[in-house]
Length: 224
Image (cartoon, rainbow, N blue to C red):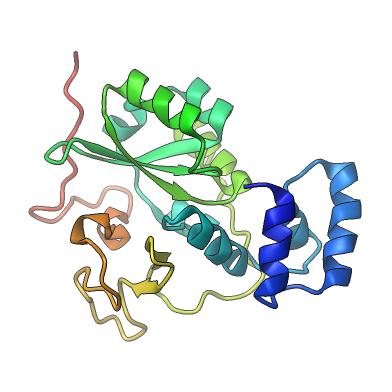
């Protein structure tokens, strides 16, 4: 999405003032960063508010930097997409579902058709489900999962609204995968969404060395 469009959407939603936008545009000329991330760096906008707007426009779901850090990505998923492709297009695979023959990737630009086509070609998987996150969060995830760097990245300037996963479906409405009291909704959405489009990120979070519960283990990629 073009930065000018992002700026207008943020203004329309009342998330920033026009003076904030003008300041960020001037700063952006120096840093060459994307407008949204420039606003966050200048403490004029928080991560979640930006991702909500981007997810709605791209008709997808989002993951914050903290949520990406919490995920436990399998080697099988990582082997499907080489690091060179990840760095080139700012994306990272987070889950491979053998039964569905689908691969979930987090991208800074889910509408990048060329990137999606290349992931399909190199992984041999036609069903690619793209989510959105900030480019800085994806770059940190690449360093962690492909290069073994352990430091985390938490961008949000404000606490997240609940302890569960806050994601957006194609309709733009919020889906709470876990309530603040720990009650599991088991993928039941507050809006009508196809069940296969709901991603239970809670099942992907594992402490290091903790064995997966029965029925939750992600299937590994078969070696060719």
